[in-house]
Image (cartoon, rainbow, N blue to C red; front, side):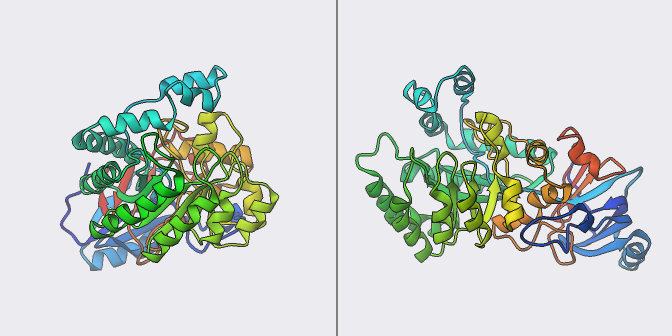
Amino acid sequence: MEDKATHSYQFIGPFTQLLPMSGLPEKGPIRDEQLAVEKEAGLLLKDGKVFGCGPYSEIGLLAEARNANHHKLNGNVVGLPGFIDAHTHSCFAGSRARDYALRNSGSSYLEIAQAGGGIWDTVTQTRAASFSELEELLIQRCKRFLSQGITTLEVKSGYGLSVNEELKMLRVIQSAGKKVSQDLIPTCLAAHMLPKDFNGDATTYLQMLAAELFPLLKSEELSNRIDAFIETSAFSPEEIGPYFKAAQNMGFDLTVHADQFSTGGSKAAILWNAKSADHLEASGEIEIRALAQSNVVATALPGASLGLGCAFTPARALLDAGACLAIASDFNPGSAPMGDLLTQAAILGTMEKLSNAEVLAGITLRAATALGLEDRGTLEVGKTADVLVFSTSNYQEILYQQGHLKPSMVWKNGLRVL
């Protein structure tokens, strides 16, 4: 459903509870008592931004004076900012169900790759897909994510692994972004692994990408974010250093797949002042302390832990050390096929003993920080009017039901889209 109202002002309410997610610390632990829970509240939106937030009667007077279009909410409802999934691989073709079955039957990652599975399997299937096929797959996934409350979605390339195929993926993301309700944030992950068909070593491959791909990303405005997988099976911190330096010199933001199976990636993320270090399942005390002392957002990816059957990101320790913790789905066909951010975030909260406030902040304002987006993540005056409505009287039910309770209404940029 898309609201075609012509009014510049949109008045939504009354909310039984409205959680603007404002006034919370940028880093470290958050107690539930720190959450501002507005009761019998209203929202006034103007031109895609929040214009007023507060008691329903007061906002109603503002709305009446401005001839606002009134969206009357009936029954018990809770309002939240739109969710932000800050790490996904949502543009791909094919399935890796065979990998999943083999992994659960005891096969190792290396054995699966040698049997024709792994990342290269998805690369092969994604390369074989046409532009229109990839675009339609991404659009359909975005529709599903919208029903889950995702109003901003990061989408990586990384299943092309050549200049032309990476460009195809990023052009698909750019094109799909004009046809879906969400904002798609494109990230170039050409440094996902050394492609099997590349005639050269890792250093030569990265040099080629920096020289040939980076200028095209800028000229076509395909992405302003460069990602790399720093791992023993992918690229070392030493190999990535010149690649990141070249990216920074051209004005790209950086993010890192870090400390998933071995450490080293988070140190590189801090060294290069990346926006975020994502995964961190292997991070120990040294890495946790270093991340907490930096401005790098620590992004937990519980979907990968569930898909691989491995340990969760040490989210509690990161928060207690003073880090900024975001939570993302890592939706991808190999290690994280679920793609349900709310379910995963609720499970991470249970396993890592996170407060409701910490979990909700991790998929709203702190996820926005991970993407360098200062215009969203809270329902404050002047921020992007991305609003979720849940049919419940108590916001605690949302995480308590572990993803079973989905939003009944979604506003994106001030317009109702669900």
